[in-house]
Amino acid sequence: MRARQLLIKPVSAYCDLQCRYCFYKDVEKHRSRRTTARMSDDVMQAVVEKGLADVDICTFGFQGGEPLLAGLGFFQKFVEEVGRLKKSDQKVLFTVQTNGWSVDERWADFFKKHEFLVGLSLDGVRKSHDSNRLGPCGEGTFEKVFAAACLLRDAGIPLNILCVLNRQTTERIEAIYRFLMRKGFFRQQYIPCLDPLDLSDPSISRGWVDVSESLDEFSLTPSMYENAIKKLFDLWVSDRMRGVPVYIRQFENGLQVLRGKTPEACTMYGKCCMQNVIEADGRVYPCDFYALDEYCMGNILETDFDTMLQESMEERAGSFFEDPTRRDDRCPDCRWYPLCRGGCRRECAQDAEGRWKNRYCEANSHFFEYAIERLEWLAARGS
Image 1: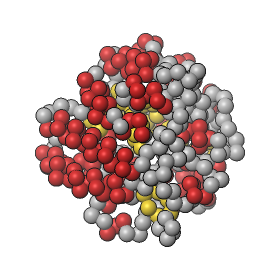
Image 2: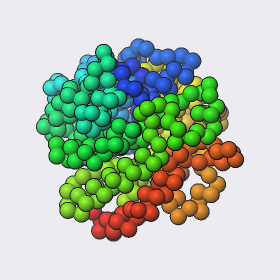
Image 3: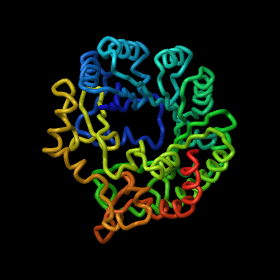
């Protein structure tokens, strides 16, 4: 079956929060043209029509910025357009990643009715969350966002809590995990905080960065990352062995690999995949980490997804796929490469000798050494 996944940004990087580590705003400021308007009906219709073309399954994912700022009316019209154009034998999935600030009963009813999978950004407990996820006036947002999470949970909406690993969250990782479990949030995802992408500084964007020296007070170092994922793993595996239905994306993908299956996380593919990131003005990029001028693949108003992918492989955007992981040439000989696959290219840089290296290479190696026996045990059990 042929599938297509779209990552739609109906208001591009526009957001009603002022999160200190936001990489969307950081990426947008490096483009020659910023997008400030909401996605037009023309772009929306082109996305739906061309997204459904020649596929059996299409996932319409919404992200930002804060996608809910497009308004409930926009989402209702989008879903109606999908219903009008989809064929009876096509399967459609809807997902959305939100900061939770705008979520109320109306949104919950809409998500429930149309079977959305909702990702909600919550950096754990109040102190870690409010350290970086600030409101329009610089205030903490925990109370309102946590209330939104509870509303969605109680409505029976599939909910994934997204927690950014940074200085503040890694210091409290056990408290965060136990808090989420106690409150009934069993689907969790922990992603490393990204340092700013400063294209004007080769030491950051094109060369090696000694991340032990933090660029910002929220930055994540390899040792912080290693300690956090080891602690998370201990907590997760203990609960899994007791039959608790907790899902942490990174560990679940590891189990998939050990079972001989394809992981769903692109960081474990060994190459970059086409994400079909669509900005509000219709411009399409291969990855939301790299929505930059040099990787723009075209505009959905002017062409279709298949043509963009084919032409990009022959032009400059093709370099994104041709040089997917920038991995160290020693990676394939590493014991852990089948599990790691080099990681995300955004986490890679060149060292003083010109070799590409993932900043979390040693941390991941230490983690796999620490966890492999228990991972293999769970994989064998089918747990």
